[in-house]
Amino acid sequence: MWTQVVGKITLALTPRSNHFWNVAMHLGSRGLVTPLLTQGARSFRIEFDFLSHELVIVCSDGSTGSIPLEPMTVTDFYHRVRAELKNMELEVKFWPVPVEIPDPIPFAEDTLHASYERSMVEAFWRALLFIKPVMEEFRCEFLGKCSPVHFFWGSFDLAVSRFSGKTAPARPEMGSIYAESYSHEVISHGFWPGSGPLQEPAFYAYCVPPPTGFAESHVSPAGAYYHRELGEFILPYESVRTSDNPALELREFLDSTYEAAANKAGWDRQSLERPLKS
Image (cartoon, helix red, strand yellow):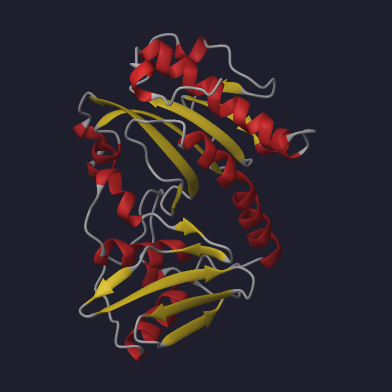
């Protein structure tokens, strides 16, 4: 919920780009950081620093602000962030309600969520630090339109998405976020700590629209499987963490699920992929 507060500030201060890429956070050497945000003649960024456990605001005029990351309600965090921005003369108007979750509670009213466990936060961040280089290498072998490796605060996942260049069938009944995110054919990969029908951290792979036969594809490594309810291939994080070669196991999952989706969807792989070096 705290990342949603900061994410809404990012949404308010950045021009909209493809598939809401402008709102995503990025992985830094100390935690998760926003893109550079501009307000008037000043620029600033906001970082969740998971080494010092602070929310840090750094402005282009040299001013800084910070809030300790410690157990507190979403309501308290929200008001402290707004007060710190006001103190730095960086007040931002934004819609104060979380998205992409069931039964959202406005930030100013959320006294239900109040936990912050340092060890779990650090473990999650350090997992992201391992995952990102593997995803970056995978990303850079694609010549077509491709997202950065970035962190979406709504779905709370580190993700990278490849696009065929073709438009996808419209799904207006799914809402504006879905319509923008999946306006074009996409194969997406990512990692998230689990939610809903999958209560464990896992890597995922899906294709929109899903081609015929994708769910029956043979993919690797051995721990990967197709989750019918999610409509995605899943590789449990524990399977990768305990592997003799975690990076290789993750790369096998990225490559095999992409190939299965791209082949069955009829993507022009020769044009979209960087030729392999001999």
